[in-house]
Length: 551
Image 1 (cartoon, rainbow, N blue to C red):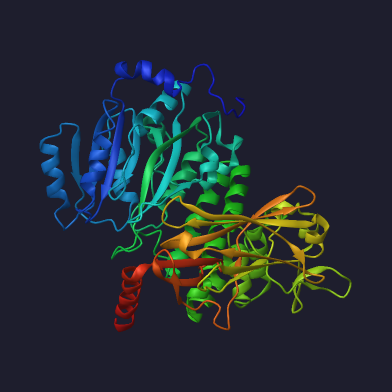
Image 2: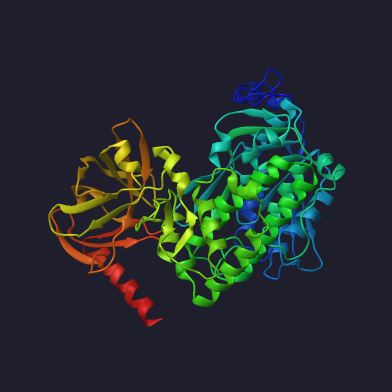
């Protein structure tokens, strides 16, 4: 068995070795581009695949019966590019799985990868994956995907903990966290491997088809090469008229489709004897899926919340004792236990904060008559005893914040709450504070403030915020609590509400003349800040606000 390694073995081609052999590398990769009624973007996707260079033998563009001229556009591109083949499906499948299967059948190259019509491959992606796959004799090579928010261009890596360095895994069970990377598009597959094991996507309108496909790949126990290179750019267009399937979470059918895909992925892994990966898949459902949707429950109507709660309880009822014993203090497991213990939706504000990243467990902190910490007085069967042995860096610390914009230095008041004696035991000393731009990588207002006791169960800190120095944009408050025992814990602050605390205000500014400032609570309850600068910026905000009210 080959152990996990962050350094490539001698027979693995590193990027430096790849430069020496690139000129002699034969065309070996087929890129399957799928699209439906995406004429505005499909050409960019195809061109990004063709631009990968001589390693790409063919680009197979599968049009899923578009009606917007996409197929005709692809035909014109193919007329000037011999490596591009266009395959038209006769009927629209309603999903992504069927056209990808069509692409698998059409590819003639030894290796295949997938690309959606509204995304792109960054330069060097194919070379990085092909070098890793051939050098390690791996059936699968996988690299870093970045989510790019449009139009802002802000990027966020996807499952970057898996892609910090080159590594080769003789089998997937060496790294169970692989189940968290359910994407199929940031990977290169040996075509014969997929065909020999009959690994295909679910057909038709099957949401989250890549969950199932990835489980089938892992179940076949391939040799896997991991690379730290960026190999895929996932474009997220939240303002689009038609949201992508994964972003359209307003309807309960989306959640049912997601649980169905996760259930099938678990069954596939368990049926293949991959018990450790199957267990990891169930843990991932709690820590990723449940937390993500639970954060949004407060945005939904009562009918949706009841349906979501009922369906989640039915799904979690299939878990066994071992599923709950693994890392019992994890926020997702606590949320899952809460859902099982309560037949109706409850405590949505506390659930939202516990589902946040990082998690926050808001007061009240109840105990049973014999001193056992519990979720609440009316739900004493949900014990919180795992927190008593959790390290400080893993605690769901509750810290709230209040910011009242004013002309000069605006005070930011922060309060850290006790958590069953664990905070006092660690000895909170100070807070590291900064504001991070939501739109780019800017960081402003870095400061440190001392935490001082304000009663038996509370510590406070206050520091000024120069709103003019922040400038225009949306700003997230980022905090790090430092303790006397040397521990640190990154946290976000719960936005205190009520009594006009989150009201939009115009304040004078020496730098801009005027600022329009709005503290607000994010979907996860954290304090954030919107700032518009100058008369023009303020006018733009007010005009947009009026337009929304009218429509």
